[in-house]
Figure 1: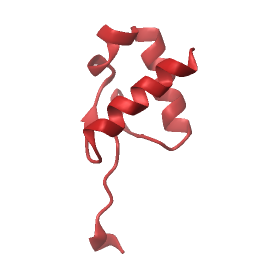
Figure 2: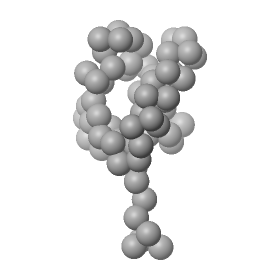
Figure 3: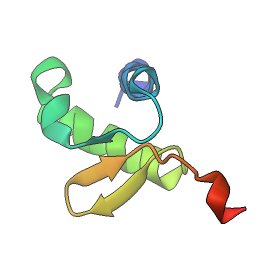
Length: 67
């Protein structure tokens, strides 16, 4: 998978801000299903996004109440 696709996906996720939940269908039209699957898997393993349940991811927002 092209690193530039992963970078574009990260930019779109970060652009929406913390707390945004999404699925691969939010990106498939632009990048293709196989590329999105690989990018989301890689970003999850790197700890940049979180897999909430099968097919649902988020860019977590941390609460100050937990500190």
